[in-house]
Image (cartoon, rainbow over all chains, first blue to last red):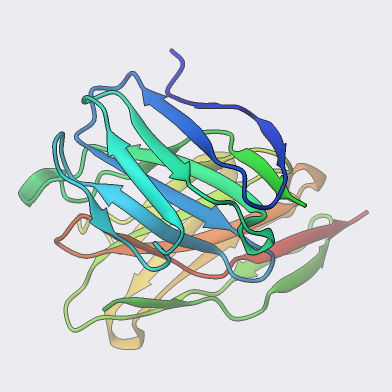
Length: 117
Length: 112
């Protein structure tokens, strides 16, 4: 039971390079999320996808794009990496819906540690 | 929008002592509430969640949290700290939409 799988686990980029962070979940969840975690700032939502075919901006979307490829996969792309995007990135999924499933928690991957020089 | 406040970014307790990590939320209606734990170089793991069935919620590893509507609080406690409890703890809230809102975290240190 893999849960949420993120690749790669570590990456070093140069300023201006692009890359895509991959995320896949095997729990048949509808909702998927991308967060960044920086010291003292908790988790900040970058983008989320409430269901297959939909994406929405979160708190800090600038400099990022996302693709909900199918129900399982949700990728995050940095088109032109900047040092300010050095962070730990977490993908999460949740079976969150209205009503009785509204209190379902998120399940997290182990993160991608990204350094931009 | 929801907001979550965790008082104390760092908490230190002696092994065997009570652990109390504070969480307050802002919401006009009781949201869904969660506590997560993060060990070094790992993702977040669910400790417990508020289900509205009971105000005192029991989670894994001996942790529990009490929902107090009048105080808009959901503090996390454990009667006796263990060395393995050293980690970062996050309180999170969710409304009826799809977004979760996290506090800035509390780092727990357990002193032997």
